[in-house]
Image (cartoon, rainbow, N blue to C red; front, top):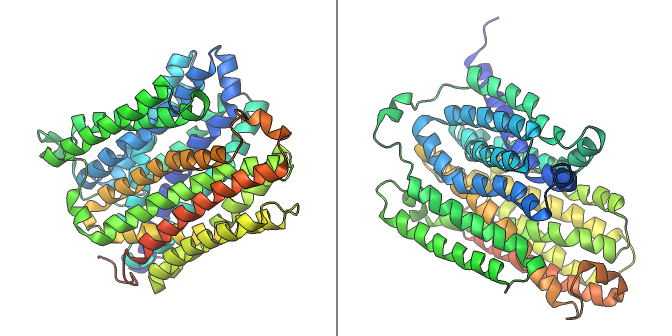
Length: 481
């Protein structure tokens, strides 16, 4: 029986969502799965923890540093083509990481994996914006966002299970079947791209190497400084030097972009105030979520007295609720617009955190469990509609660039949110307390006061996201075609 055009379009939408969802899932999974397995990795390869830090940073720096470039490349050559390359490189480098005989080879493999991840990150949402009709984009983005949350939720449990049962190398080798399956879908079942390989014959394909280098160095310096700051001290020479280097190279990057004949940043997108403010909301939301994710495990262990296993199970509530709410919110945004969902979601999160500060010292688990559920609902209401709005504000030929900006600000917000929450928490502790191991000796009331400061900071950041969402659009129901 011959399929109707409507059924063919539905099949195409499902394939796009499947490939984009796999990309989002693998990207986030590999950002978290390594952390829990790092002790096994450094022990087996006989290196110290300083080298272990670079096993993590090599991936996150190249992922964030290349996402703008690959977003622009996808606009030139097509989402499907860049996604195909991304799956090949990501899967191949996962094999290299899994077979790495030394830490040097593993770091090199993680660098390549980050580049492949940059391709997948730039195209996972961009493909939804390019290949799905406007009236289905919210639904599609909701599913892709849920896949990201699933990757974040399962990263630590999968990493711990594989490391213990099969060895740390399997945290990388597990990517092979998923990557090859998704590569097949994109290569042979995906919509054909309008971009052509003839674009590669031009003297330039719109990628500024100097801009890419400056962005990678700036992000690498920032992430290294923020990662080492809590342990080495924010005023120590390596940390302070890294942060100053990040500031210098960030300014140099913007200076280069303003004068480049073919910049990585599509400046025309920022002429629309709504695009700029919606991305600011995305940035603040990333900070808020990262801050809460940093604070809550410590709160549950040191204030509520839970063990690590129970703490991990409780924290799954946030991601689990978000996975359920996100697709529903995405579909709702296709019908009622984005402002009510995005503004309401972040206002709900901010209000919930403020109320929780008064209940944080209660011995009952009802308040923290209720807050995690509420935050899962709030974040689920917010993220898909926000991402839909950002993509809808970009023209068809700018979906990759818009997705790149969205992802970059999300990646930037995470370490800054952790640093801000950590600074607020430490500020509330006695000056004599220099390490987490000393927290057990403190009265619970002092710990509660310190955590209240951290949660208030997260509430303020969520309120900033709500304000940006309020002013980022009208009802947002009419997207660009």
